[in-house]
Every structure is written in C-alpha cells, then in structure tokens.
Length: 244
Image (tube, rainbow, N blue to C red; front, side, top):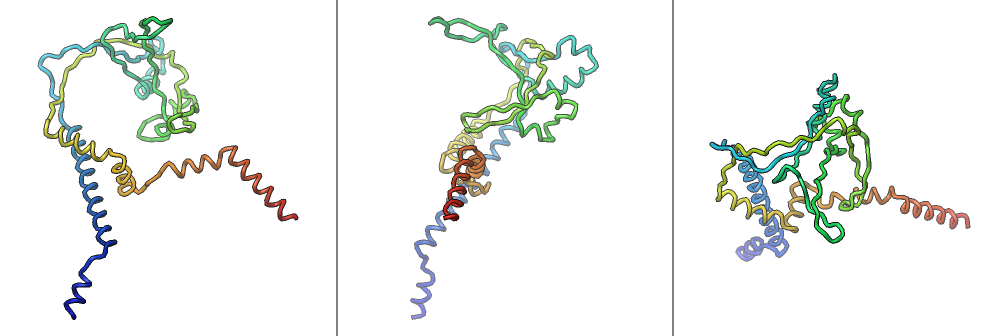
C-alpha cells in the first residue's frame, strides 16, 4: 500500500509535464540566443589585416567645410557638427549617376546626397556629444512615419551651404579574414532566433516585454482628437441621463 502511494506521488501530472517541456524549450532558446551574441562579437572583433598592395574600388563622395567656413573663427564648431551628420556615398565612376525613366526613356541623373538628420533619441543622448553651441544650428521638425504610423521628431541642420561635396578614390587597404565554421554556425543560429515565434518569445522572456508598442499606441489613441471627442460625448450623455 505504501509503495502504491509513493508511486502515485512520483507520477507527474500532464500540466507538470507540459510546464517542464516549455521550460526546456525556453532554456534551449536562451542558450542559442546567448551563443549567437557571442558569435556576433567574435565576428566583429576579428582584426583587420593590411593588404600588401592596396587597390582602388570606385569613388567615395562626402561633405567637407567650404573655403569660406575654413577661414572663419567658427571652423572648429562646424567641423564638430559635420562629424556628427556627415554622409558618404560610393560609386563606380566619378559622376555618381543613377538610372531614371523619363517619357518612356531611361536617362542618367546625378545622385542626390544630403546630410544626416539627428533623431530625438540622439538629441538627448549625452554619448552622442552634441554641445550647447551646436544645438542652435538645428531646426526641430516632425514627419509622419508610414511604417510606425505615427509622427516622429528629428532635427535638421539649417545651414547646409557651409559644407561642400568632395570626391576622392575609394582605396581598399585592409581586409578581414573569414572563418567558414564560425560563419556557418552564426548563420544557422541567426536564422533560428529570427523566426517570428522565436523572436517574440525572446523579446518576452529575456527583455520582459511582449507588446511594447501597445501601450504607446493606446496612449496616442487617447490623445487623438477623434477619441477625445468620443469621451466628451459619453460624459455629456451620462450627465444628461443623471439629470432625468
């Protein structure tokens, strides 16, 4: 009788087995996610090796201070701004052309190149290094993001005429060796952890947020004019019935 009771207590319920199975799966996902991060760091920290014979691969175009700003007293100030918003564009030829269709014909037009805008996150980030003397030269703007379906704030440099485009040959002087075993393992783990259901489980269990966008979306919905009008109408309707 005692052996039967002991055997009964050792038997696991279906709920316990299911919970244990889920924990085992989550443990495996955590291990693979941790390993993918380790491999990413290993790939990033592979040292660059200088080439014995550097070679040219097209041209690169970037912004520099124009001659008038270089001779001014604020040259150091705008040099610091340019380091934060400069952009680089690469092309096989010095002309920097792209194809475009006009009246049914394909023509070549020059590629447009602009300075970077500063996001609202970088604007308040102390590590970005934006000084109090550089902030007055930026204009705050808002633009609708169709992907996130909301207005986003950014800061645009107001005096782009202070910079000029410069073209120079793009020289390849270093290369990074490729570890085939490391690349294969990293590709397999990356393909696994980026699956829709796996990525959602990682975001929920490791970072503790299942739907981080939901709270922000509901806040924007409450602040919207259409929803606010509905709230006011409901209150007025409730006051009307109380007076009856």
